[in-house]
Image: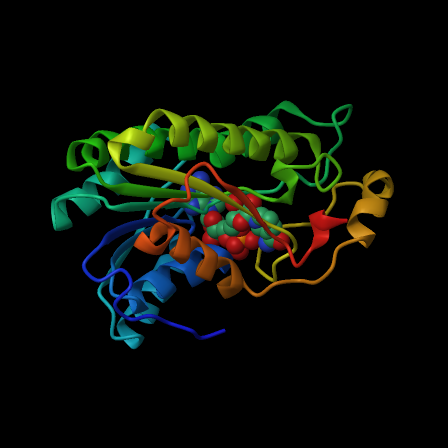
Length: 256
Ligand SMILES: NC(=O)c1ccc[n+]([C@@H]2O[C@H](COP(=O)([O-])OP(=O)(O)OC[C@H]3O[C@@H](n4cnc5c(N)ncnc54)[C@H](O)[C@@H]3O)[C@@H](O)[C@H]2O)c1
């Protein structure tokens, strides 16, 4: 998909998490090609170099850095990098996320639960908390959270992932409502299956049996840029009246 509006985000300062792979990579490159100053992070240092190179290849301004958004130190360093260089943050795209090996509630271990929660909901919360004061002060800002079909139904993933994405939907609605009159919008996209590098192996294939009726009903796998295009639109002025929306981008999967 290549319907790029090169002026859509001209001069905007955009934070993208998980920019080294999949939806985050597509989102970072799309915003960059649409004129934004993109500051992207990833926990995987082998991926940020390639992202910097991709920015240059696209002839775009953009910074890629290593940061772990599940820690306050990582969040602070990431936001500081954008503010030091560009003076503000206009858009936050919370894309980074991890899966949970499809562990149902009786089988989930503490380490998996904590890791999934820390990346999928603690990180977006800490980033949201960091960028809101500046957005409220300027009366302008857009936050787009990448949730999942697992954020609106129970049968798509394991217990930790499902709970974390439902929490992200709740955070989205809370921020949308509370800051609506401050010029800040917050929305969530809920992808179905997307062709990315995300680790989607079950720890025990037997755990997939209970999810099979939902999984078999999936309509199509999307390409990462098909999600990035929705993120870009939600962050743009064209979506000025869209706030607190939780939008499936799943080819119709949740329609059934
Ligand atoms: N792929 C799918 O089918 C699908 C479906 C629904 C929702 N999603 C969601 O889309 C988002 C992006 O996933 P993807 O499929 O592109 O996965 P991906 O694994 O291809 O990319 C995610 C990136 O996030 C990075 N990351 C992980 N933990 C991090 C941390 N603590 N700090 C910074 N970066 C970190 C990873 O290194 C990776 O590069 C996730 O939130 C995921 O839950 C994906």
